[in-house]
Length: 350
Image (cartoon, rainbow, N blue to C red; front, top):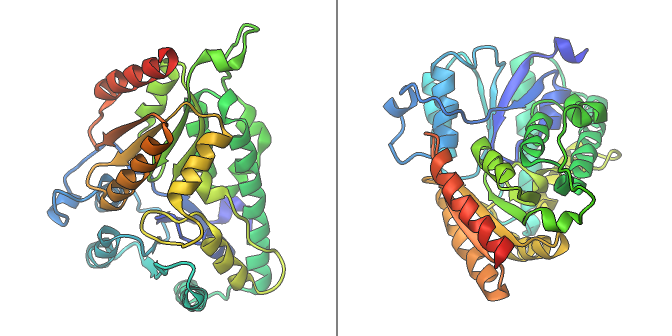
C-alpha cells in the first residue's frame, strides 16, 4: 500500500506506538493544538483543562478532523483519561483507540502489562479494519520508523546550527509522517543557518535547552530566533526524547515495541528509578554546553508543573540559569518576547 493510499489516523500523547498504526495500513499523524478556540470543547471540559486536550476535542467537534480514520491515546494524565470517555460519547464518527501505559516503568510487571495492552490494541485495530496485522508488516513499520528516528537524531545533532523556527518545522514534520523525517533533502530545503561572519558560533547567542510537553508554541521559537538564541536540545515529551530509542527489528515485534517505550526517558506522568528526568536534563545541559534552560509548559498541565519545580531545584543547585514561561491557547507572543529577550540578554552579558 503506497503512502498516498493510507488514510490518516490521529494520535496524541507521547507513548502511542505509531508502528502498530502504520502496520495496520494508516499514516499516524500527531494532532497539534491550534490557537483557535471555537468553544465546542468548553461545553464538555472544565475551564482548567490544558490546551492540548481541549484543542484536540475542539477540532474534532468542529469537523476539522473528519478525515481521520480514528484517534489513538495512551494513558498519561487524568485529563487524557477523562477525554477518552468524552470523546467516545461526543465524537462517534472518529473511533477512539485507548491503551494503558504502566506508571512505574522499571517494575518487572511493567513489561508484561504493556505487552498485554499492545496485543489488545492490535486486536481492536484489526476489528476496526477487518484486516490482520502481520508480524512482517510490524517489522517493516519498525524499520521505517527506526530510520525516521535516526534522521531526527541527526537533525538534533546539528540543532545549534539551525534557526529555531526551522528546528521546530522539521521536528513537527517528523511527527506527521515517517517519510518526511527520512527525507534528508526535505530537511535541508529552505533551512536557515546563522551567518557567523567568520566569528565563533559561541559568540552568536546563548545556547538554550527547552523543556515541556509536545513542542510548545511556535511563537516561542520565533522569539528565540529574533533574540539570536540557539536551541541546542530539548526535553519535550514529543521532542528529542521521543526519537532517542529504536525498536529491535528482529524477534517478536510487539516485544520490541514494548522495550522501546520502556527505554525512553519518562515523561512527567511516569517514573523510572534509573532514568531520572532531573539527571537527564542536567546531563543534556552539560553535554550541549547550554547557557540556560527555558521551561515552556502548558497552562493547567499539572504533571509538567510538578516536574518544573523538581527540575528547577536541581538547576539552581547546579548554578544553571532558567526561565519558566506558561503557554496559553491565546497568543502570548508579546509577553514571551519581553521575558525571553530579558533572559537571553542576561545569559549573554551576565
